[in-house]
Image (tube, rainbow, N blue to C red; front, side, top):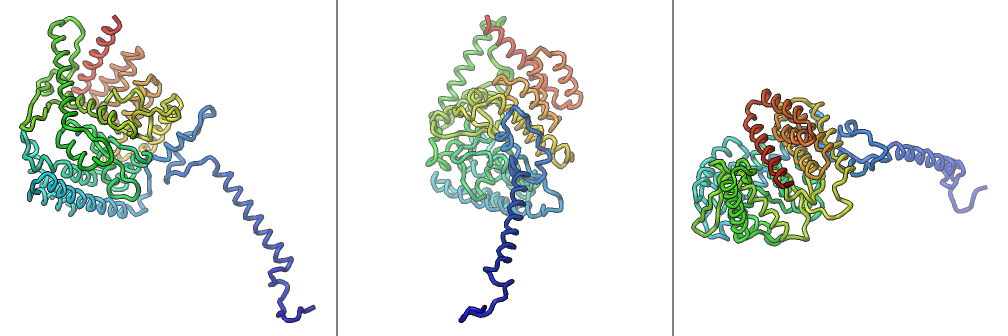
Length: 491
């Protein structure tokens, strides 16, 4: 029967037709079944970059995998060559140009603040970085570097050295690293930071690549500093100019106090060794070399300076501790260049780097977290094994091997010898010429009574890498010194 006033609608096309409703319900049920099946198949997995899932170690029944999976998700990406590598190159080149403009503007702002002129050769250098030709960049930087080496350096170069060195480091990283690997490494570091964290970069890649990406990418702009520069008075001025409104920076008075404290301590230890030659030496190996012998130098403005790499890193360590004490409310993450053992006591893992002053029990360094970190480094080493072209990737291999050594150092200090040994071995596997990996492993072996195995390994390493023989001999002296100190402390 036709309803008056409404057009006739065939039953199959009527939206209220029972057949239509049955068909719709059937489609809905099928869709739900497919969705449930996909969810079951993917349950427990953490999204990761392409090529990562096949490398993920199988979880053990006894350990929670959440923290480990977050680590593994930060493995560097491995993309097929067919995926536009040129796009990564264009991205990096664009970031370097943007960063050069940024640091050039910063140099002009600092020149205005400190009432100096920006020299013409500094302008040429920034123009070369923006143009992106490495040979021109290198040629433009060399005269600046020579001027900075003068004692004291010209005031204009000294004041502007921070932005100059940042621009050089970004350009050199872009020159040395394949573009996609640079982006992946920077993301592995920056992606590990929590909001508001201060990042302390040590090595050149660990300092300059995160700085480049931090300043040229969307998202939070972290405070980024380097522990290696803290002993330079001009670097403290640079930090205050950059971040004086975001953290309590170090003053020249802080710097002078750190220098004088170290110098006083060194002289005390040196005097002890002279008066008691038969007792274990207190001056550390390297400190008493002519090139490393601390010398107090007072510059024209009254600042204290010190020469020698061992002495400088000891001062940098003191200054980093001062910076932490001045900013108790801030969280700090560290990429280690030189072992600064005063930071180990309350440090924990933070992706491929470490978090300092980690008082939260949930983030504490435990055996489980250490084992998860070993899984991460093992998976990373497996990626490098799958892509074995060391000649192309040597800078990347060196950098990740260094990161692994830093975490192994932390494990060794915090009494996780098994995890330390495994991580040193993995670091050596990633980059076999890494002397820090093999000496760190030797320290663990000797500490567990395996001196013969340690010495055999060191001798073989010297045969394969004769250019590292001096570093190995320095390690042996250092280890003997530390052992003597331990024996003396037990008496």
